[in-house]
Image 1 (cartoon, rainbow, N blue to C red):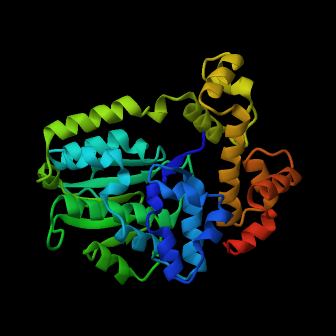
Image 2: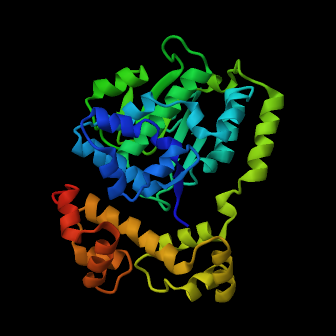
Length: 344
């Protein structure tokens, strides 16, 4: 099963691309995203294609802060049914618990959490935003969109009219895409750190006890009941477990239905039936994982194509070339040149 994200995440994308002088239809077509899907916030888009499209649009339209600009045009409502439960929560702690539990409704590849301060400062915690890289490759623009929206939602729910005085720093895993001043102005804090171990907002621990004026226990219970009844936790699905097993064993012998079934303690036929019941199959999952890994190695590294083939589990480079042409309508060399990774 391919990891997805709700189409609401692209709210504002088409208008922004047009304002930048581009044609959103060109990007949507290139990454096989139907424009019709964007008509509904609840439509589902493959998160890898979603993220690759953001990175490509930013590069080709000369808009390094595209992710931040999209975040400025969005709000809590993009989370759909989850937004109601968050807003109705009594405190920041309960809201974070809610979004941590049900973030999969928006995308199973994205995770929100709270952890001790990675810089070891007492009285400070990190509100983390993470993408599961076993589900989809890293995207700087998508990360800035996510962290930027996370920040804006916090400001909105806390009804802060001035600076976010409890914010110590913003942590981003990649290097700056825009001038640093753009980040400090967006987040309202001088400390925006790049090359961090994880994406996070470092805040005063006391902020977790802040209450929401929108708190409503009745609405919260109804919203949580709706989420529980209508959405299944992806971690409980067999296809997600198989995808993770395949991602961990790419390039290692034993990447077969039989071997994977053995690792999961199932008979191969049982595994086939359960995957079919979830609308997928073993070969489809392997193909999806190889596609995402190939994109990463071809477009983000200078690893020789013969080694890329080995790392993603192809017996020879010709098989990689054939697959890349099928996935991306270009040879590995042309794709690397097109995405500007040849010198990395």
